[in-house]
Length: 459
Image (cartoon, rainbow, N blue to C red; front, side, top):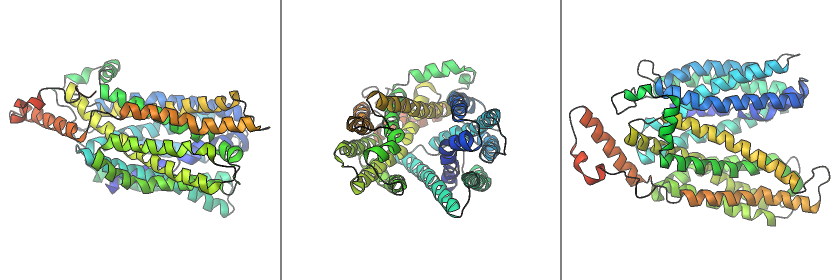
């Protein structure tokens, strides 16, 4: 478990430098220009979104010595490491073409690692609750990586390092740790050598045919839509967070990082709680209660007076705990959906499903930014001359729009069909099919629950 979870720390470590510091580093310090830098990063992220399903499709279809996940990670890790080094340690006089080229290299390597890595996690175990434990470990280490980057950046800045030197140190730390944990992952964690239950005829399916098969998977589509909606609901306050702290809460600059720290720490601490709760009521219901908790916290925000940092700190802790549910539970549900796909079609399509999952996350963040920033401007908020009505509009969009979206998500997922019982039935049917293929047909095939679609009455 540790060997599988540790790479999540390394993957998350450079997230803050790449997504937050690059615009300032290239746009201002290196003289590329903010507009040019923005367009280049937009192109790179669009490229990143497009490559997700392609890599997912290929790592499902292509195998090297029977392995479909490990080879991609082994090749992608050095590509991502070198791209990360080049993009976070630029020389003087770099141009926009330098940023574009190494951004594409970095995102390509990152995708080659992330898509197979997440799909692999869904295949390590077929147990309903064990899958939650696996995602809990992985996402906890990912959050610790984000916090670790913030701590390392703060320490290096306190030592008098320049911003460029600080983020360069984070790149070196990620590369050094990657040299250790990626080989450990590849050696210590087993991978199934075969993922199909059919006779291999599905190997000739085209990319569009694979997408059509996913389009007939109702639990997958339902879960993907809820994941997208919840991503938009999380992305709106994320896009407006610092604007709200400055103009809505009017918090001092030295206090603002504490809200971020409390949010992520609460998420890490809460993950074991959500794991236990999911064993009691099921993963989808536990996730629903996490989203409901976030709604209750956000509803309180319009009544928080400017300067009430303690009250908003409580909101950050509650929403951080809810974020822990968002991280730990939905990927475990997605793993169950891959079993359902394998039962219905003989093709789990794990890599492609998790690729579309990641693509949905990126699109949700893009939609959230596209709604939030133009939304507050259209509502009359001007950061240069903030009026009372403008501040009120900022607070309402920051806090209440996400509540509406999350309520929709809860309504859609509350009766999700893949419960622990249904997933156990699916596993029995898959095992029965496997025995039948080897000439050892199980008596399970003659039972009524082996013949009907286990989700047909609930989807």
